[in-house]
Image (tube, rainbow over all chains, first blue to last red; front, top):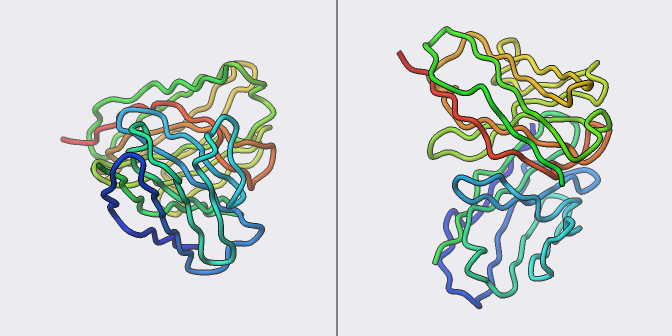
Length: 107
Length: 121
């Protein structure tokens, strides 16, 4: 099973600042089967990035993903008020799929 | 637009059973793998398993293998999660999610809002 470790656990920033979230895998992620999701309390999680760096449909350009192998990054270039949420990375290759423990981006 | 709506959550005693449903609309349900994911109170997301587009094959996380069963009814665009031998640590919000493609390795591109299951005596 691939274990994903996200850091930091909490990121305290202000609107307009840049957010850099890290996701490290316990072994190499084949074919970049790595996704990022945004989750706000009481809402459905939202897919942001798949295949490590491909933005999902309708996702603003300020969200970008990068990385390969075992190290992946989600960058939000200029935080908007609606971006304060919890972000999860996920390995979605051959089972079992796993999630990181999440990074909370707070004001 | 794509919609997924979970139902069937509630309070159940330890050792009991519960069946969750997920109604899909706005897309061709039979063309997609479908998944169940949960979030325990104060915890992160946990993938539970998924089922192939035809319903012939399903895969599970070790934590629920043998206790939970995923099934689907493509004629009714519905996904199900049969849960048995429930434990207090199964208390969570349960989400259904659409896998983007018709294969084992695709991301979850749409999610429902979830249904709360509470396991308590």
